[in-house]
Length: 179
Image: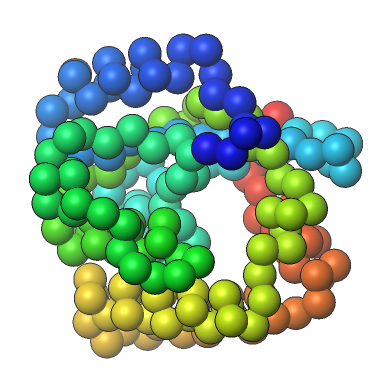
């Protein structure tokens, strides 16, 4: 979580209760409400509800809003640290968790306000985009082998090297709904 993100008051209570009631789930996250000074409306962004949905979506984007994550300790018994993938540690971690067959879930209700600042939208460049492309390709290959879905990381890469106004417009198009 960044300093400008805000957790809902009952977030941890919900997540811990969920993990207690669902002992087969290892990692739980949730939907977010994005906000910024530039947005006239807040936007609700949802993530895949089940591991099957997460596996289907990981070729396109991260299956989690990273600052919403709550892990079981057992995850850290098998994955003791972030993968060493400069600038793309989060998505590399999700690929590693899928390889280890951890079970994921996401609340469809928001549990965090996420600030989309200019700095967030500017976090890209050729080096980071190339690193992300490599991370997605090796991650996808590690969980499903050679697949037609490997085309999507290339499409992400092309989008990420476009001028910033186009990336910004595309980023806000993908948001699920107004909050």
